[in-house]
Length: 573
Image 1: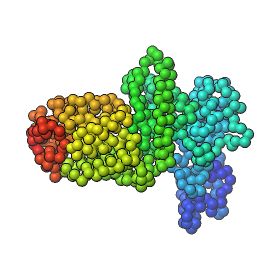
Image 2: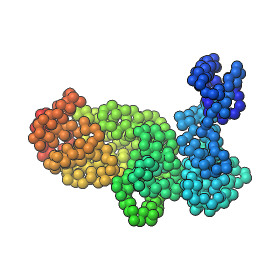
Image 3: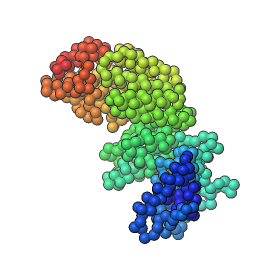
Image 4: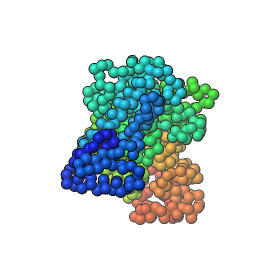
């Protein structure tokens, strides 16, 4: 309310103020306004000047008593003013508001558009001047923010593609008949196509990169500027990308910023790992590693940025229609994404929560095969976690995977889930066929390699399985628990029990692998540790029956079946 009154710069009728902040019941709104004003006046009694000027008809603020981040520095310092304007846009004005249709939401969106217009005005004022150093950096930052706000601002894009300071300000001013800047939500409708959003997630926070002397973040910044000059994608500003990187609620921030592609980067010493993820399917479209050579880093940055940009442009172009589909039905996409995020925790509550999200996605888009594949995945995972040999779960899992393949045959993930369900049904050849098809569709999708490795484990090929899962972990260095669990299973059947336990110990949540850990300790002769694992298994699953479980676990080779039985018996089952 203070921001609203400060921006208004004149007394606002109490009735209008109450209706804006408490829409609905006028009587209740008037009461809420009186209570709020009274509490505010009590809280600021020590102020030398009254904060609010209130009478029976109107409310206003005493501007001399306030400082406000809506104010910008004097135009005589254009660099400081541009920085302040960029800060306002980057942090987003009242980020939790502006999504609905109330008068307050409308005002919030108007304020954001107004701040963007002011930033563009200050950007143009400084753009034609010869600048360097801090001013040059602030111009780059402002240009990226303006293109995030409006991906169709060709004047800013053309300026960004030129050496800074080389384009006169007049060259980027809009034609006389064009408005300075319109809210993006209005422009998209008139232009007809909005490029998909891309977030480039830096490997470190800005502070960590500075302390480590890392050039990896600088490479990502170079790449951001390169891609901003392209019409193929709309790039999320670095400030936002850094917040996404650091947030525990990545799905929420990705939803707010409508991100379709994420370039995930991870630094390890002098190496930078890069992978491009298509967020609607959680698929890795491309992955590679770069060595950061200190002796030739300037040339490297240019070469690496060019290579990554060329790859992104090619892949995004080839998936344009697919990205547009998800852009048209964002509710389905983000419900699906929340389901995928829930599956990062291998517990029954998390799996069932994920299933609810996938069903919600289908409510928004009945033809979303990826959501069907997600449901299939939850059913197969529940079959593993409950260890009851429930054949109905697997039958449903296969049914949903087959339906997913009908609707989304171009996606590797649907064949991955088909392969998983058929593995646990004991259909080894059919499982391998589905997983090989998934791998042909997307050879860089590490989750497919993990599922392929799991089928090889159960199919009596643990050596080939370990090689396959190591390849998956190389593509996804921060390996999920399922990767480590699969590697542990392969190591167990190779007789490498200590190595298997090493993989289990690296899991964030070791409980799903307690049976396997107990078997390893049993074979190593450590009965005390084996029994501790057994007690955890029985606590989580009191109805566990060894012989029943052994009858349901698919094993192509009899020696695997007997080895697992012997190990679990030694563990006390």
